[in-house]
Amino acid sequence: MIVIKNTKAMQFNPPKVWENVDVVIDGTDIIDVGPGVASKYKADKVIDGTDKLTYPGLICSHHHYYSGLSRGVMAEIGPTPDFVSILKNLWWRMDRSLDEEATYYSGIISSIDAIKAGTTSVIDHHASPNYINGSLSTIRKSMEKVGLRGMTCYEVTDRNGTSQMKEGVEENIRFAKEIDADKKDSSIPYIFEAHIGGHAPCTINDDGLGMMADAIKSTGKGLHLHVAEDKYDVSQSHLVYGQDIVKRLDNLGMLNDKTILVHGLFLNTEEIDILNERNGFLVHNSRSNMNNNVGYNSRLGDYKNLALGTDGIGPNMFEEIKVAYFKHKDDGGPLWPGDFLTFLSNGNELLKRNFGANFGQLEKGYKADIVVADYLSPSPLVGDNIGGHMVFGMTSGDVETVIVNGNVVMENRKFPFDVREIYAKAAVSAQGVWDKMDKI
Image (cartoon, helix red, strand yellow):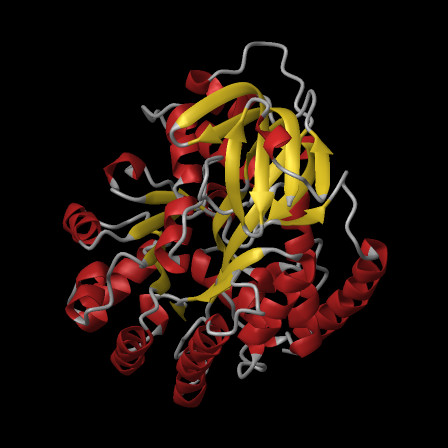
C-alpha cells in the first residue's frame, strides 16, 4: 500500500483542485482520497506530498516509437518539398532501417522520456518493414521495462508489396492474441493493449483494408489509422476508389468506439458526422502538422471525441498542449486553454474503452496512474483555471515522482535502473540506423 500524504490534488475532467489531502493506493487502484484518510491505513510506502501537486498521469494518444532514434538524424535525406517526399525520403527509409535491437532501444528511450514528462500512457503506432513478426512484442517489452502503460499496433501498408502487407496484418492479429492470452494470467500486470493498425488509406489497397476489417472483427480491437493528413490522401481516395476516406472505412465496418483516426485535416462534414456517429476518436497532433507543413485542422470543436497526440515528436504532452493551443489561437480559433485540457484528458476515455477500467481521476476505484510534481504557482490554482496553468505555467520539469498501475516507476526524478547506460547503447543503435538509411 502506498500513501501520498498531505498533498494538493488536481484532476482535469471534471476540473478540480483540493488542498491537504491524502491519496491511498492499494494494488493497482486508488482506494481512498481525502484530508487525513491516511491515518486509517498501514502504508508500506509514504510519499510526502507537502507543497507538491498530485494529478492523474498524462496520455499521449498517438505516437510513433520508431522515431525514437531520429533525434538529430544525420543521413542523406534528399529533397522534401512536399509531404509525400518527406515520407519517402525520411520516414520510410528510417523505418526500413530498424531491426529488433533498434526497435527496442527506440522504444525504451521513448518510454523513459514519457515518464520523465509525466506521461503515464502512450498509444503507439509502429512500423519496421524489415522486422515485422514479433516487433510489437519488442515495443511492449521496451515499455514494460520502464513501467509505462501502453498500446501499440503495426502499420499495415501496401507500399512494400502484398507479402509485407499481409505480414503486417498477421502481426497485428498475433499480438492481439498475445495480449488476450496474457490477460488470463493474473501474474502478468495488465498494462498493455492492442489496436489493428494501418499507415493511411492512400497506401492500403482494398485487399489490405479488407484484411484489416476482418482482423478488427475477429480480435475485437479498434482501428488505429492516419487519415487526411495531407490533401494527397483525400485526392487519391477519390481518384482510385471514388469515395471519401471515412466512407470507405465505414463501408467495410471498420469504425467503432475503439477507433483512433489521426490528423483528419481535410475530412469533410459528412465524414466527421460518420466518425461522431460511430463514437470514434480523432487525435490532433499540432507539432507534427506544423513540422510537415500539411496545414491546420480548424474544425477541432466539431468532433465528439478529440484527443491529443504527438505523431512521433516525443511524448511530452506539456509541450504538445501548449503548441496546440497557441497554433489554434494563431489560426484565429475560438477555443481556450480549458478546451485543450479536455482534449488532453480525453485520452483517459480511450484507455477506459480498451482496458475496461477507470482512468483520469483521483477518486476511489480509479487506476493509480499518478504524477507528483513540484509546481510552485505565483497565482491561485483552482478548478476553473487549470487549463491556463497547463498552457502558461506547468512544464515537464516540474515532474518528480510517477506511479503507474500502483507501482512507483520514477521517484525524485530517478529510475530504478541505469538510464545513462541505456542512452549510451541507444546512441550506438541510432548511428547504425542512420548508416543503414544512407544505403537505402
